[in-house]
Length: 337
Ligand SMILES: Cc1cc2nc3c(=O)[nH]c(=O)nc-3n(C[C@H](O)[C@H](O)[C@H](O)COP(=O)(O)OP(=O)(O)OC[C@H]3O[C@@H](n4cnc5c(N)ncnc54)[C@H](O)[C@@H]3O)c2cc1C
Image (tube, rainbow, N blue to C red; front, side, top):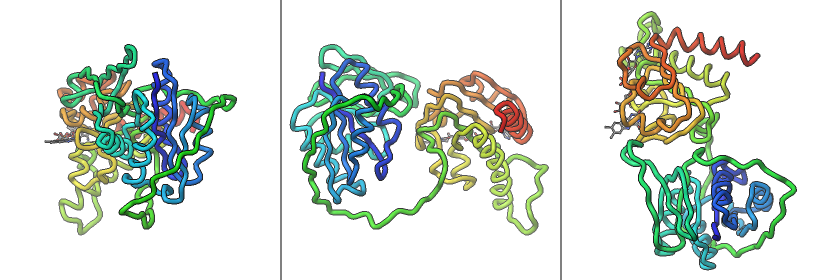
């Protein structure tokens, strides 16, 4: 079987889920062609080979320097005229967008956010969570190519092997685009939630510490946000010691405690870290939809009946303002930080 894998990257830096997608294709016994688009991204082509691609189709053009869906999708659709049996994309924002556009261009179907795959001949059967992760759906695409986006961290990332070699074929890019990127502004530094191995998340409970006295002159709403910021500072310290990212519930985001980019759940990010620590989060179904596939879930909550404890491997009934700093200290000592 011939599987092509789109290598998602930002300015030449690949997302780890691109390598996971190459690993997933190889695990099915397929010949893997990586698709690398951009400007001056020949190094990325070599990296794709090191991570398991047998061959690379490389489209380089100054017009592809900044990701824009139209020329990228048109270039991919042009490449795919060769007729692969399947094309994998990582389930990133760009990957989802491109998968949909390429599927439209090629008049085929797209299976999104897949967490496991089986092959029989050239027919792939994909498994994807539905109904907020309560059901796993088995689904096939009868049209060709089968376009599939793979959930980040659902498939193992192959180790890079610099001794691997493979052909790199240059392909002419489609460059017409109705839009132009004028510039970038870094909104936030830090570990990306979807790639993080460890996530420490905070909910509405982060604002619940009556012992904290806000500065004079704050309204009730400002005082609540100020308290929550103290809670999230503690959460950030724990995440920092563990080399992880900070997540949040929607209640925390809606209340203005932390920006939306941290939201985990049905209407936020879907994550599957090795360790997810939920602090002051009740465990509503919409939150679980975003994190129930985490390998180990730890819940810290004052309420012993909070639903989050039903999905947690380890639960601590207590006040996050006491438990989180104690955990940070313990991990600092243990990890020698
Ligand atoms: C269409 C739709 C989409 C949604 N999408 C999402 C989504 O993507 N993500 C999401 O998270 N939610 C989502 N929600 C909202 C969801 O239903 C819940 O309202 C939300 O998850 C609750 O957030 P929370 O657990 O932080 O707050 P609460 O439910 O208010 O829970 C706070 C918890 O903190 C505990 N607590 C309080 N003080 C402390 C303390 N000091 N120490 C320890 N524990 C403490 C309490 O016991 C309680 O369990 C969605 C809802 C709808 C309708």
